[in-house]
Image (tube, rainbow, N blue to C red):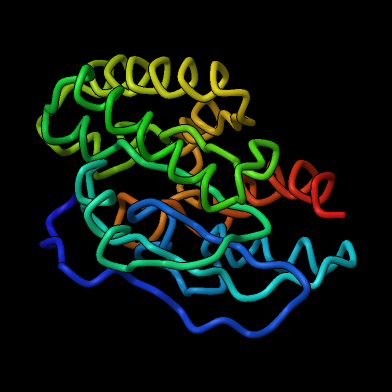
Length: 219
């Protein structure tokens, strides 16, 4: 999504050692495009968990602005990760919608990515957390994109209906941040300086929504 070209190299960060490890899979919403790294939701989530007494390593992030489900799949294969993680988050699909890719393809590839995420969590479904796709049509960029914001919202809802059904059918936790993302239409503080991506304030809402759920499964 947006105008940046995709890249063949995923954004991955060296981890500081901790008692728990975290793998974050996604796109611009996972790397925190246009905000400081510390303001991205994975890093805010890490800090919230530390405040709860869970010493979580820096997130291992595989995400690049513009990625679709198939591009994330390819990047994971290139990364050739070994071992498992204490927990995994997955947020992907906005660029499938933005490019007009069919939902049928999204369903197939999202299902495969979800199974990959479960495998990275050592087969423990309780340690995988799917986040819904936010509505970029509510942002200034969306309003000035030449596309109808209501059409964008309807399409985002369709993609989220698909990923939610797949997630719940697999027995995986689902966090719906989409309704709150639409508050960006009236609260510009929820939008980064680029006018499109979430601000640290919105990412804080996502991290808060996830922190209790993740804390509960980290024993």
